[in-house]
Image (cartoon, rainbow, N blue to C red):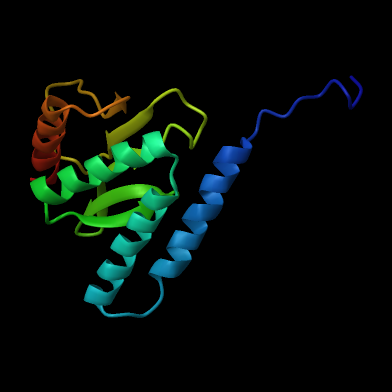
Length: 149
């Protein structure tokens, strides 16, 4: 086999970028600051990241952020792999991922394993978003409240 026929099935450019962003987030989190200052900085970083998004992703992310803040104010906003996420006691509970991030056809919101959503032996951990209706927002609010409980 010559070198021109070899393919590399490693990380995509988007995946490498996400890992670089996560490394920056981890480095920033080790800085010494008061808990309140750190929380304010992390929320400001989330809002800045949302402001950078394409219009369709930004609209969804702004609504998702508002729903999470209203339904589970105990969750702390933070960046996770360059995307908005929300943690309780330092453990990530839920996150928002733009469609643009991995060239997907829809944005996603999902839950990590610390979310309190167990329901039998199988349950959904992420959802596709193309728009947010009032009914969708109510459903997200309910899921986020349960996940944070």
